[in-house]
Image 1 (spheres, one colour):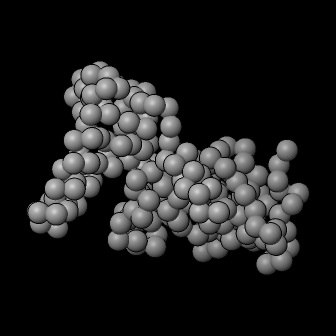
Image 2 (spheres, one colour):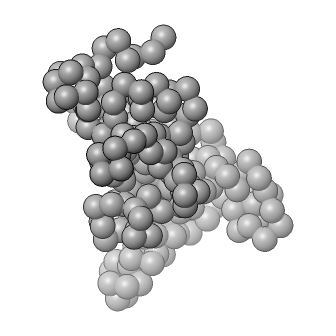
Length: 199
């Protein structure tokens, strides 16, 4: 059932703000506006369509560039006058070529993107993929790599440069993500566990 019956399009002359968030990384990509017609088109086609105030018409993001925003989920806020859409962006979201219209200097949640890349390597293995080569060696080798990288991270922290420490820490996190995937777990499982401990 459509959530449109819950959205209050009348508060601001028929338009409601729409926040677009990357479904994988949770990065905020852009803000636009929808009227009821734009919302229905978005829901029906699965691609984000706004009402363009400057063009005074419906505008599907990516209709010219091909950089569509494919809808993954739609939520509304407590006042029923703002929409949050989690989407899978194809290419950069901003017309300037930037990943986000807010010009964030890096993807704050790239670790989730990396997790998705590792999942893709599992789902679509290729001979050139390091993840695929590691996976073929089995669970024991993957776990061993995490141990090796853990030791190298400790050594770098105690006796090497800051750059070495960051590089070894990155290797450790990467291999831990592969181990999580191999065991059938995700960062979400870790986050929920840590959140439960915090309570």
